[in-house]
Amino acid sequence: MALYLDVIWFLNFCIDFLLIVLTGMVLKRKMQKWRLITGSLIGSLYVLLLFVPSEISMYHPLIKFGFSLLIMAVSFGFQKFSYFFKNVAMFYFVSFVTGGGLFAAHYFLQSDLSIMNGMVATKGTGMGDVLSWAFVCIGFPAVWLFSKKRVDDIKVQKLHYTELVQVEIRMDDTTIHATGLIDSGNKLHDPITKVPVMILDMNQHDKHFPEEIISFSKDIHAFPDGEACAHPWEARLRIVPFRAVGKDNEFLPAIKPDEVRINSRAGEFSCTKVLIGLSYTSLSSENNFSCIVHPEVMSNGMEQIAAS
Image (cartoon, rainbow, N blue to C red; front, top):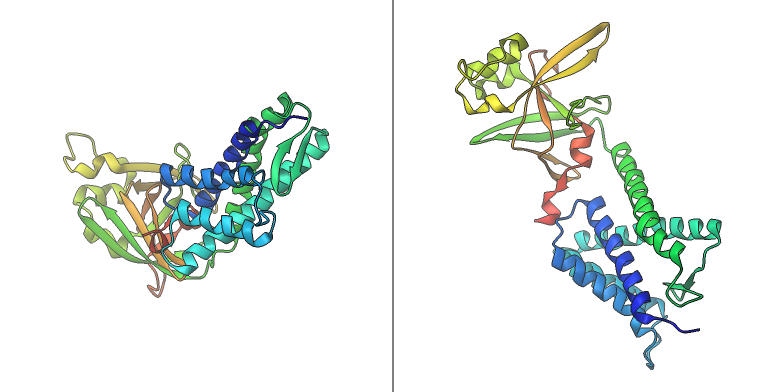
């Protein structure tokens, strides 16, 4: 049987690329296209080296592990050991999860995929049949998205919900500093954009806002129009519906920040897809915190300390 190495190489290149991208998405790494492509090329080069006669066994676990280290170093850089170790560990984790899903689906469908010394190969024509390529184009991204969803669920569940964190809310030249509480019970989202909503205690922080925004936060019926409010923050205002205990059809005034940064024991996180609910209800009777942090803000945020 003839083996079409170019086809096998391209198949493995695509899989390596998806695995590297998934690793970066799970860890919230900054990804550069040239790094991702170069890392994928290095990973797929391993397949071609298997067919090159050499005194060094390319099947040795240390050789494979060395390739993994090189792939991660090229794809995300080496800034410090803990950062690099997380990249390598997550790369293996997503490889096991998605690889297991691929193998299980092919076994169930009885297709012609086979694993040869750690690489994906095909039988029959040497290029794979329609089912194999359809699986790569459709099935693998499906397993990829499912795997990412499961990892995100694990990350949210493992957040320390009683932890107090330091919060920075940035809008234009204004920065609001607050102590926030990660609240697992906060499931509030904007129904239109689906972004999470944090809650800010305006009793402590209304000094950072213009009078028009303060009036709006106290009474949503005082929503400023173009003539009544010339402040540039007018375009940031939102109204978020929510349900409170014993009440229906409640509305929370909110504002769209440029960025929210959270400093916790797990690291520093940055999020731009978030709304800040403006509430004059005291959040802490002892003023231990003045902000309720939505758990998704941290799980969706980019870890800045490791990535910078």
